[in-house]
Length: 173
Length: 173
DNA sequence: GTTGTAATTGTTATATCATAACAAAAGTTT
DNA sequence: AAACTTTTGTTATGATATAACAATTACAAC
Ligand SMILES: [Zn+2]
Ligand SMILES: [Zn+2]
Ligand SMILES: [Zn+2]
Ligand SMILES: [Zn+2]
Image 1 (cartoon, rainbow over the protein chains, first blue to last red):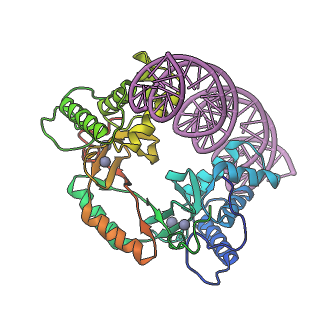
Image 2 (cartoon, helix red, strand yellow):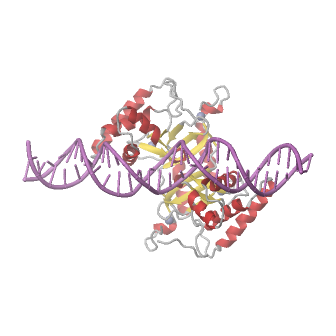
Image 3 (cartoon, chains in turn orange, cyan, brown, yellow):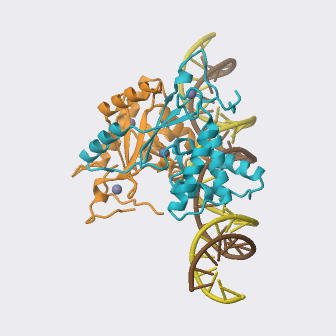
């Protein structure tokens, strides 16, 4: 299963018409720098580059895919390298793990406290991160009724994205 | 902490006071038999026993844990054995996979069309399957607003279960 | 600027989860 | 029984993730 690596993409599902993804990456990296300074965390070369590479990807990136990219650029190519970077970025709230894909995605709202609802397309595997505050509140209340204290930070929802619903475009794997 | 294997336990979190889990297992197996006959599927020895073992476990069971149990009973001990059984049971709607745990859980509503909302305890790792119809409808509508056709059959929610919230009981791993 | 300390990275090995491919056996239909 | 389909056995490998410990680097104190 080969991945699409073209430049003409749709981010993770956002319907931005003339969306320059470079701006996203720059913005995400700038936010990351600030957050790390604030939290006294060090955004080292490999961590920073890992974050960039995750953002450059058009969909969630697997750990070993990321490791391969890092290795190409001269970083150490053993698994702990990438898993350490991922752990750091996850703990810093700069990326999310999509459990159902074993893959990692840049967080679009790293600076805000938020619940990430991930709309994962079964067809093209793009992922869009949304913030369903009202539904989340209802969910917390519902769970509380059953004595469960909901703490989930991310919720994964699968289905068909707008593009893949349209037969004209079809799914692009 | 050792796992509670008595009959008086909390299933996957349901607040049944004097709940005999053997009844659950029997009921689940009976339902499975019926469903398989209806669908022209064969619930072979290994598939049936796998389903029983999954139900006998008090929390989601990993594939290799299940494989070990099957092997103890004389079944073939190679991975395909268990993954084939799991595939069958998943396709038949008799079990669910909890992606965030890489583990498998008997479905409590195999005979009904339903959305499984899994309340996964971060502490004791028990899982309760609930059916939040109203919230799910809201979620479908919300996703649709963004052009996304929600098809998720299972949604995983993490947090703290009723037991683990209480310091008196504490978490039982 | 040297020394001590903590954080990060390098390295090797291994654990854990899952599937591919093909052969053998068992069940089903004719 | 023969032909066919489904299931199971078997071997090998792929894919994801972590443990353990050594070496290096960053940083602060002196
Ligand atoms: Zn986020
Ligand atoms: Zn799609
Ligand atoms: Zn279910
Ligand atoms: Zn618990």
